[in-house]
Amino acid sequence: MRILKQRLFERESEWCRRANRRCGSSSLRHFMRGISRLGDGVFWYSLMAGLMLFGGTRGAAAALHLAATGIMSQLLYRGLKRWTKRARPCASDALIKAWIAPLDEFSFPSGHTLHAIAFSIVAIAYFPPLSWLLLPFCVCVALSRVLLGLHYPSDVLAAIGIGIGLGKLSLLAGELADRHVALQLLA
Image 1 (tube, rainbow, N blue to C red):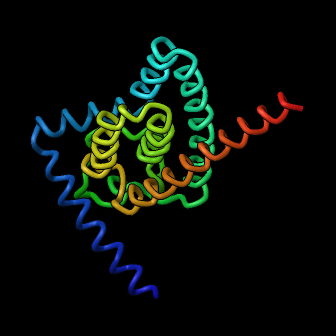
Image 2 (cartoon, rainbow, N blue to C red; image 1 turned 90 degrees about the vertical axis):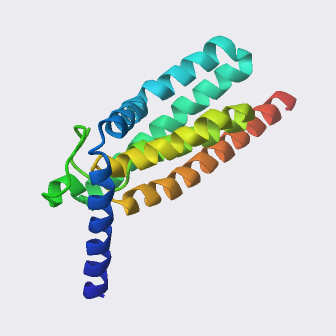
Image 3 (tube, rainbow, N blue to C red; image 1 turned 120 degrees about the vertical axis):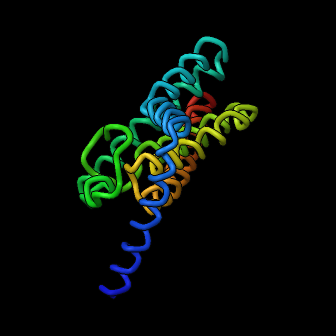
């Protein structure tokens, strides 16, 4: 088991080195840095503000739902990072350069990717036409984390799975809360 784990880690580290070298191109590096910075929260706060301002009552409900999802995402991914304490690729391999400063010390899971997926699921549930914007953004955020040397591919893949689960759980919780309020009004 230990040998298999070591081989997987070596293979993943090689993928990280290859991906990271691609950011040697300044145009790709600047694009990925920009995407990553937007994924720090600017994009999502702007989306919530836009929904509040221009989306009517449905937009306000979506923005509040996104805020609640963001709080759950933050608590979950920070707890997982403290529990796993996986070093970032740029910290464990001298051949991998961090093309942007990491926001925290640990790698697993990718918080940017987790947030992007969970937020997109919730936002698209309220406003399906947003998918043309949010889905490509999610892909770019996920790619940026590996290309910039901050995450292993498994960090990003795990974050996608966790983000999907969290987004769907958030929608289910919202539906249950709506049903509970409706039943209370009928009673």
